[in-house]
Amino acid sequence: MVIGIIGGGASGMAAAIAASENTENQIVLLERQARVGRKLQATGNGRCNLSNLYALEGRYHGDDPSFASCALKTFPPEETLQWFRNLGLFTVTEPSGKVYPYSDHANSVVDVLRLQLNKDNIQLRCGCEVQKIKKQEQGFCVQCGDESFMFDKVIIACGGLAGTKLGGSMSGYQLLRSLGHHCTRLRPALVQIKSDWSGCVSLKGVRTNCKAEILHNGKIYAQSAGELQFTDYGLSGPVIFEISRDVCQQPGVWCCKLDFLPDVKEEELHKELQRRGDAGISAEDLLTGILHNRLGRVLCGAVGIRGNQSDLSDYDLRNVCRAVKGFEVTLTETMGMDSAQVTAGGIVTREFEEKTMESKLVPGLYACGEVLDIDGDCGGYNLQWAWSSGLLAGKSAGGIP
Ligand SMILES: Cc1cc2nc3c(=O)[nH]c(=O)nc-3n(C[C@H](O)[C@H](O)[C@H](O)COP(=O)(O)OP(=O)(O)OC[C@H]3O[C@@H](n4cnc5c(N)ncnc54)[C@H](O)[C@@H]3O)c2cc1C
Image 1 (cartoon, helix red, strand yellow):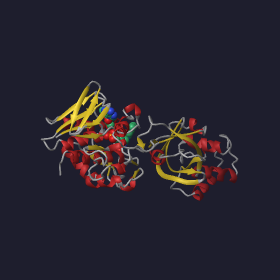
Image 2 (cartoon, helix red, strand yellow):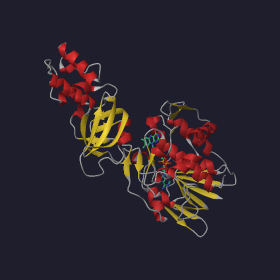
Image 3 (cartoon, protein in one colour):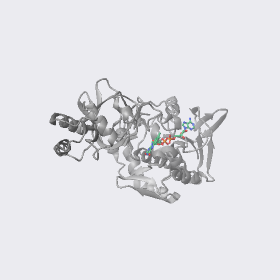
Image 4 (cartoon, helix red, strand yellow):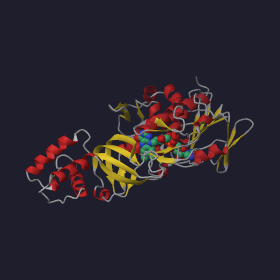
């Protein structure tokens, strides 16, 4: 059997290696960039958060997130890590369940996959962009520039639109649509959010732990806790990525309420500020030792207290406490696809068999990874989906039990 795999990213490489287990299969992996795994190399800030031990259905989104269950149960994180261990990759798991390569370098992940592709029954073709796929009476005709290939089966592993500078594109959606599949609306997810609050500019680069709630017309829309990073245009960091999905996509007032001291009660903070106020400490140092200095000063400024002011009233102190425990920042829009880590939306999953990843519309056609309408939370869930769905598609197409 000759199997063509379109896309040499996370899911495509996993599919190729899985399908090649049967040495009678001939695998042709077509990648449009100069090398495989380009996006993978940039993941997790170059560290590659390749999995999460808690990758279960509740961590995934899409019109039918339950579609992801079958692949995740067939190739759960533990089994995927064993698969990587067999390829020669050592990994470390953090208490949060996040898994990284032991080397702390994404290159290690790309390298073990690349080495494994170096097999007699896998032909790797980089710089080869597939433009057209035609279903023939027997198999498929795949066109890349002047060249065409004949395959018995085809796996589409072209990824999503997110991370455009790293290779994200519309290509996979277009190829699948040309074969009769449908695509839901694409939106950026795991992405920074813009704000018109002028304080962001002064706080650029400040990182802090916090509890964050997204409010839509005053009602809680999403919440999370973790690290926040201020940027000149708004809010970033894992806590923001986590709650960014579909923010500002509907009309209305969107804002983010930030608790910069989630583990300290407002009354306890008030007592401490009273003590500092009684000692004549000025506004400039009112929150010193509690918050990042710049953040403390900006919050005092935001409630109208000047830096050198030391005769602080209880009203002032209460306002500072409220700012620390529930500061509201208005949100305008999310950043675009080029900044996003993952695409929300994609090819309609009910058009595929969850047990095999084969198309219900075109026999012999498979899809895996981000091109499908499945996106995961921040923390290794998206790569776990890419591995699980890629391995399942590769084994199914390759006829491997
Ligand atoms: C900056 C960044 C950081 C991230 N960090 C993490 C993280 O730490 N943990 C995590 O779980 N997820 C992370 N993600 C998300 C994760 O990288 C993706 O969800 C995952 O790579 C998707 O795998 P895929 O195989 O579907 O697509 P990709 O890995 O994007 O691979 C698709 C491949 O197909 C190729 N291709 C596309 N069209 C064609 C065509 N027509 N012909 C030939 N080749 C084609 C592309 O060039 C690409 O190499 C991150 C994403 C970004 C952008």
